[in-house]
Amino acid sequence: MADALFRVRKLNVWYRQGKTLVHALKNIDIDIPERTLTVIMGRSGSGKSTFLRVLNRVIEIYNVKVEGEVYLKDKDIFKMDAQQLRTRVVMVLQRPIALPMSIYDNIAYLLKSVKKVNDSKKIRSKVEEALKLANLWDEVKDRLHTPASNLSGGQIQRLAIARALALDPEVLLLDEPTSHLDPESTRIIESTIMKLKDRISIIFVTHSVEQAKRLAEYVIFFENGRVVEAGYADEIFEKPKTDSLRKFLGLS
Image (tube, rainbow, N blue to C red):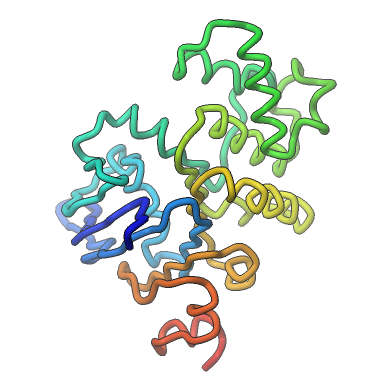
């Protein structure tokens, strides 16, 4: 794939459980296209979230062993400064938290501490821009200086997306961001993602086939720590090649 965003070769990950190594990812070889909404799907425990955590090396905070190569364009991510990588490849967790400060400061704090922005006018402009991109501005513009903890679950999820976008990343990683949300909040998040996909590369993890069908341009299907199939959405959903994927899609 000439325009690959990530090139992954012979990636293996083991979790340590006492003296035992659990093989979580097994010989992953995959290219992920740039400027594409890539959906990683599979059952719970198939390795989806573990793989996502490798892409910005947040996996390193866990007790793991990692082997293999991962390139972000032409850069080996394991030779990059980890903090620099995590500003280029930003992750939003399944259950993000609101930092114990105002809605405004949830974003301004990162701009000051990570991006080293000190100009108050630039910070205000960036906060507004990020909240608009995350489809949250109209709901909070009159209460920016109230505690972020007062927001609903769906709003906190969008605030986390706004925080990520304020860093101007190249890649946005989303780990099942709607799995604990009501249908209306899910609809808003999905609408937000669809509007963002032309601006930034997005990798979105889900266990929902229907959600994958609504969102995906490119699909990677995981099972038992392996990539079973990968391809563009029309190929994956219309002509699955393996019995595993056909069964997951409810076709057999």
